[in-house]
Image 1: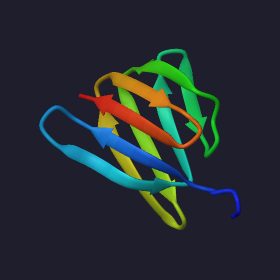
Image 2 (image 1 turned 45 degrees about the vertical axis):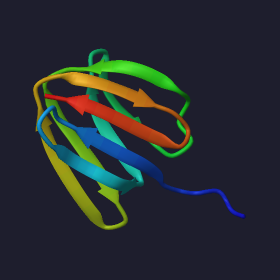
Image 3 (image 1 turned 90 degrees about the vertical axis):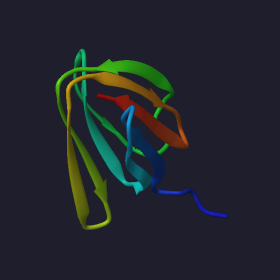
Length: 83
C-alpha cells in the first residue's frame, strides 16, 4: 500500500460545517504567521488569527474567511475550529 498524498480536512464553525474532505495543501493564518500544511505534517496545535484559509485539492481551490480559531494538525488529518 502506497503513501497517501492527501490529508483529511475538517473545518467547523459553531453553527455549521464549512468543509469535510480531502486536501493536498492547506494554508492557515496562524498567530505566528502564515503556515502551509501538507500531508504527513508534524503534529502541532496552534491558534488562528483573522485571515483566510486556502484549501487546495487536485485542481480545485476553496477559500474561507475567518475571524479566529484553533488548528489541530497531525500526520493524517487537520481539524480547524473557527469563527
